[in-house]
Amino acid sequence: MVLSIIIFLFQLWGTESSLLLRYEKQVNKIISKELSLDKVQLAREEFSRGELYRISNADKSEGFLLVAEVAACRLGGCSTFEKLNDNKSSEYFDLLLLVDENKSIVKVSILDYYSEYGYEVTSKKYLKKFTHKNICNFSNDSDDIDAVSGATVSSYALEAMIGSLCEFI
Image (cartoon, rainbow, N blue to C red):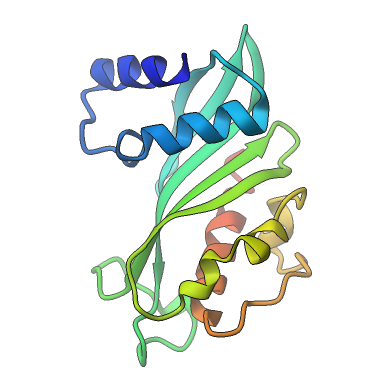
């Protein structure tokens, strides 16, 4: 089962504080449902903005999994996503993104949202708009998805994280 494979890989790597390990049940359910796979192998890729894994099944690449902490400005804080810095002065939410081998989004899920403001970004109806979009469309702002009302900054942060994957996958 996927869950036992994930646990085994993390025992080998010794990364007990991993986001993937924290959300292993949700990740297992999403991979099984969205990719219709029971047994997969995860190989960690180099990516500085989150945990990026190549998903394979029987030596065939099936896609990529990203589990990341996404920064969004605090209420009354920065005016654009580009003004964020890494000193934790921003609010964060945990993201799961499943991408197929053609860079098309299979599933976007907000695993945990920590703020009282901007929670509208977790709406399933809003997140469904990302399905089947190419991740590279987010890096050049041609995704045709408007920010959700009440969560403009969180929406921009989500799109910026997705767009940053284009050059890595």
